[in-house]
Image (cartoon, rainbow, N blue to C red; front, top):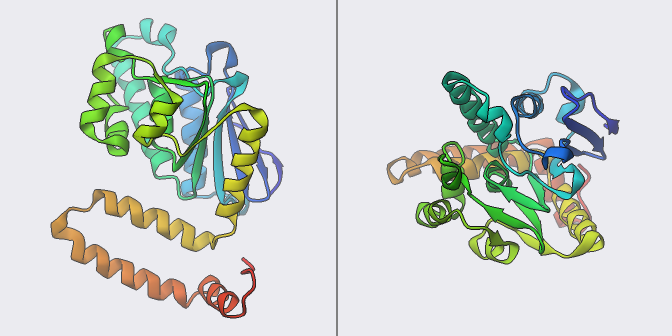
Length: 270
């Protein structure tokens, strides 16, 4: 699968190359603030990844989320929110929560690239990514309380990422914080400085992810999501399911190829 894909909205640009889907938020004049159209378009793309309707989608192995204009996402579209009714606001906010859930459940590794600012909903996008590469000059915040709002749909995902206490501190102060601080908190996987270093780090990470078995990667993502959601009482059942999955995968075509390649001291051919 290679080339431009059909996007459900001009606010979203899609391209695929050698198993990598790149999604560009495309409202640079609004610093890629999330409005209803952009949320819906991104939900549609995640739906394709979750339940591929065309064979090409199943060939994708890595997803990269970026923002046009040098900014990942400045949060929600304040103009749209101000003009909406109470019912419309509730629906818009809940739809964004469903989008974050879909991104968190993305079946393939999700990499975001944080440049410019990642505020409010933008920090939500960072929090649901498997990896986020951050520009050292980027800034972050949960500014909702200063707008008279709450980080309603964002809070659970930031809390999962860095812990509820630290997430609450960020939300209550609403202060901007640096990429260095975001890295210390565990929101960012790596920092970069300048376009060259950004592209090098992104290419290196993608290469590493593409070297893995596609099916084992999907199963591993699903396993760790289950780990995050499983309480101590359900742990034996999770371990049972995990052992069944391991045995099944080891006897699959990819599993046999991976084990054989290791013994033959060669790269696996996926």
